[in-house]
Length: 228
Image (cartoon, rainbow, N blue to C red; front, side):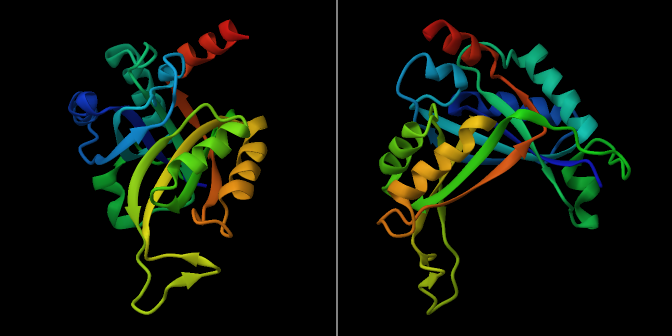
């Protein structure tokens, strides 16, 4: 299986250009930037890089080796492990259109290399109707989440198609990204679906993705140990 990864870097809005310049300097010219906001409530949680403030989510595609190189660079050059700098993670992909390889993917793709996994954390993606973020985040916290990052979005249902499997697709949406410990994933997702699922005004759906590489979490883990 190809070692393809989607890399997400979540940083303060004012630091976005610095991080984009880093990617370009490391032969990764294609970076998609999305405006977002954090939802964590305390200074301790801000160490995750997702406190309640304006954020930018940077998305790019990398090979397994490219991900490891970029992660090391983010820590060494941009001090990603320092407080309030943000986080970076990669999730494995199954395939990509061949024509996009050279322009989008950083690093050589090894057709035979397997995907390495960071089995300690997973990325939970929640899609909900806009203006219901507090309901979703409160439910996620009840399940054990520390906080999340919210990206504004919009459904693209065809004209005349209001719902799909009970979910209103054409509404304004919010995508909530939560990085969680693997052992907390089920509780968080269950809590969200019970309090903000398809039978509620939020109409939330959620899924989890494995994380293959991660950086920027060291300070949060140290702080959580200190709080215990």
